[in-house]
Amino acid sequence: MADIDAVAGQFVDFYYQTFDSDRKNLGSLYRDASMLTFEGAQIAGSAAIVEKLVSLPFQKVQHKVTTKDAQPSSGSVASLLVSVTGLLVVDDSPNPLQFSQVFHLLPEGGSYYVFNDIFRLNYA
Image (cartoon, rainbow, N blue to C red; front, side):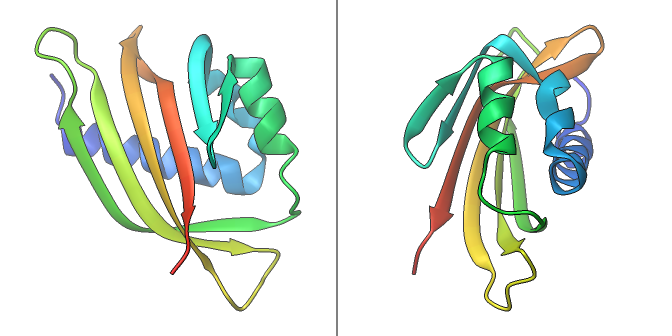
């Protein structure tokens, strides 16, 4: 298996850079069997996931990753779990929101796709 921390780091960087610049381009990271749980709501399939992400009620967003942890999720498949926490700056608000997100990445053709994605805002 590739270096898990390196794979997780590359994925996280790419995911949030893409999300922050143009959410429509995240579709290539999901498949029809993928599932997103966003604040408790479950969305299945690449098209529905991207539709949800694009419809979020803000124009500008910036993710600031605070922590990133990764573990292998199978002894037989080069899949991994990636847990991320950080700050979400929405529409240049001076009060960033805290978030946590977990990705289950599965290998496909020398790369990875998001099989499961769980997102939550963390309220203090």
